[in-house]
Amino acid sequence: MTAPPPPVPRRGALALLASTQLLLIMDTAIVNVALPSVGEDLGSGSTGLSWVANAYLITFGGLLLLGGRVADLLGHRRVFLGGLGLLAVASAAGGLAPGADALVAARAAQGVGAALAAAAAFALLLLLFPDGPARHKALGVFAAMGGLGGVLGTVLGGVLTDVLGWRATFWLNVLLAAALAAPALRLLAPRTAAASRGGFDLAGALTATAGLGLVAHALVGGADAGWLSARTLGTGGAGLALLLAFAAVETRTAAPLVPPAVLARPALRLANVLAALAQTTLFPMFFLVSLYLQSVLGYAPLGGGLGLLPLSLVVVAVAPQTGRIIFRVGLHRTMTLGFVLLCAGTLWLALALTADGTFASTVLAPSLLLGAALPLVMVTTNVAATAEAAPEETGLVSGLVNTGQQFGSVLGLAVLVAVAAARTGDTTRTGAADAARAAAETAGFRAALLTGAALAALAALLSVRLHLPERAAAPEDRVPDPY
Image (cartoon, rainbow, N blue to C red; front, side, top):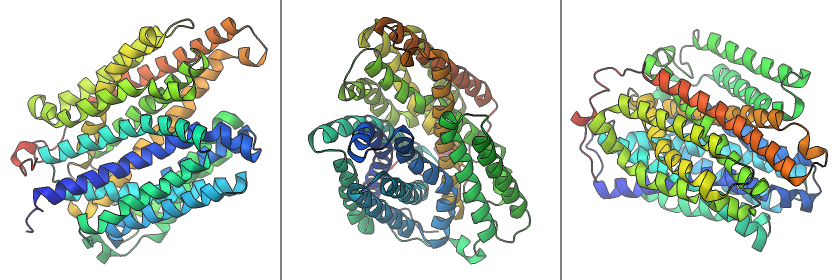
């Protein structure tokens, strides 16, 4: 058995992979902030602008599973570098886009690159850090960088758009992707997974990718087109039909994209559901809080982003300690505690919102609680989902957990924004007084956050049912923490 790499290279590799996570999360937020300026410059309406964001989410979510399997087959470092390269090229195309259609195409290509890079980066982390305290700490760093990326994207999006224009947000991606690719050849060892001997499941790849892409398309477009519209139902139905076809293909092929034996693991299935539920609450919470600060309390976009800074600082502080918490109280209890805190923080935030409040009186305190909950739920669900993964399955398992998280984010944003819009009603479109408009919008945000709290409560109840096999539940006997 090959000896583990020495500590210093592993620290460098972790810094590189965690910075990639930061880049990918930041990219989602940074472009969202720039969208109003994009519309003014390119003359695009709200529908066209929505697809600047949605094209990225659809390809990202639809290709994560395939990206993870391709990384197992072709080599994780190779796919990681290919994903970063495609992300950089697509970002440059976005920075040069002459119109909205070209920008949407560039964003779709960005999503492809992001899916490849994200799945390969997570698989490389699993290979570098065997299950145990070292992996728990590495996943904590990943969670910290994800939380920081959301805030940095919002802040940098506002600064760059105001100072240099919206195209600068795309050129920043080019620079950061190049900066990450340069040290990868030195810090990441080339690996060729044993799974490559089994061939490639083309039928499974096509049905899974197309099915996931169509389901993502239906989710992100449902709020605009209507959940019961023929287009939404047709797209979603076609996606589900393809996923059923994928399930049938996997039981018959000699080298399945997702071996049924992997999906037969109860802990993996439940951990992926819990990871999705966590993002269903967390991802829209960032969006709703920023929107509340801007549209109700009157903050500028930059101020709305900075309002999330205390939450992110708590994430950065708590995430590296999550491994120690798991060691002291156990994975199961830590996960349940995280979901209880997530439910309590979201419920507190919902009840605290008022139309005439201030940041300190409404958002600050519950956001600190949510900052503590985020790394607990994200690290523990990732640990549980990956604990039983063999080396040749790392890309596959990373693709599965990333897909669950991405679809949780997309579904949560679509559903909670729809709840907020339904509760708000037509007040904002009928020229109502500012006080009435603010009260209606606050009621909408409160209803959405209460829905998120209910989903977190469901996850807390489900987490009690999670039980890892004995081999995977004793991480303290594994490789010692190299830090």
